Length: 457
Image (cartoon, rainbow, N blue to C red; front, side):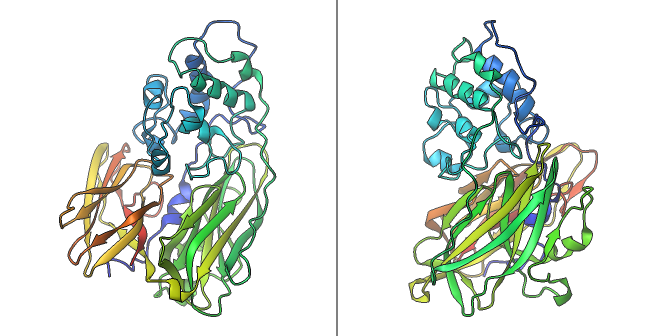
């Protein structure tokens, strides 16, 4: 079994206590794009107008697409935006697999920028991450069409190729009404949900609810489907370390908010988070994760899951939140390799003030271990998280990389990574500590983390 497998303070959710979702530039009606404009009559280049009307007010904002900690390494300030977009490969592995570019000249549907701006549920069927700007009602119809026209015309840096009058259309994109996720058929699985709740205007609400699965016997889950209302930030499922003291275990079906109405933290509701063990999760409104054939996660009889939902509302109106998860099961006879969750954490962090630091930690295994999926966790000072193989003929091989601390992907491996006894995984994490104080391992986003999550057998 991998070393450090039962780390009791794996706190993925707690890190999100002070996550700052993108969404700068939202107006009172929930739209984005800055002040209203008159119908333009000048010859301002379409890209320059796009920079002024969209990127600068809504994207190149704090904690989003500026500076050394820009999400996905994508800087959208006027001096860098064009070079970082046109013809550049994305960091999202699903988008890479689909042959996309951040902007593919002449092809809007193959441009991740365009796809991330479309709010329609299901448009990003291959999980390219949440629509942007996060926590808003999205860019207007006019802005979206302006972007499409610019890309379709070849995405030039100079010249007028998109109709500037579109930018006067501030109407919001229309999306289908949210529909509850249909439950699995009888005998095919279980559904859990977080019932509808309110998210106040200009507020981030994050809550937990401990739910019984109601499985009377041991079952095996080989597919996990989730669905959330718009404005969601993440939906994570946790179990608890078997050594969790009983008085730290939460009650079933009780909503535990992380923040009070005034934004202050509710410490009592955060205690149980110190004993969480990652089970599954999604950063998108809809996801459908299928485990490799012959593998499945075991859920012992009478299993319970701590549901963690985070919503970011950067509009002036109250919105509803709601989340569903379907746990599809298969007969035990079909499971060749029962899966376990991988938790490898480096708690020995000391990041000097005002410096860029790369921290390396090896985790070796005491028996043959087959890894089927990997993901990572770091905080806002983390700029790059790499996972490499330790030992054997593949020593040093890069098998995972993430440059977006807030939206780490789950990387599944069609050909699992087989590690023999004595081999393992290495986390190589780069941090940029721009503060005047040393940063150590800790729970809040003012501190840092270095954790490898995944599935293995």
